Image (cartoon, rainbow, N blue to C red):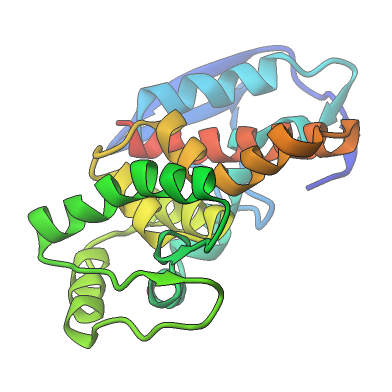
Length: 232
């Protein structure tokens, strides 16, 4: 969805349907890249998607439409293959970002503890899931019962909820952060900050180039598109 096509509509409307919302371009509902009619799960997401279509000028630029790309990906890839998405989330849980801590410097060690430990504590207190933490990059085996519990927790997820948890998991490298966001244990910006502690630390030390800034802005837009579902 990175091509540009000429704008072919004049009006954009939100249309309520059973169990969701559709976006009408004039009288036609928008479709995914796979030509499936998109049905949005909540009004906030529908409003954001309608705004993306209203902002288009002479040409439609899908690169500037993160909600559209997310909705299309869920419709085409998640709804029809939910077990694959759940399996990938579980795979990330076995080697979760929050479980791998640095050995130095001390300031980053403390930052990881202060941001990441409270998230993992919620899993232990609320769900009985205890993640094993390691220092360095050496792989650590997670407790089998805890991973079985993770599998049970993500089993009911479907549709856009599953798509959002999957996208956040893959973007951050952390199923724990994605599930914490889903359970509202962290805010969207707190989850984003947790996922970028190491990167932010490096930026503080060495600065950030323009290309990296633009890349991060695009990723943040994708992240926030998924969060429209998890915030509901």
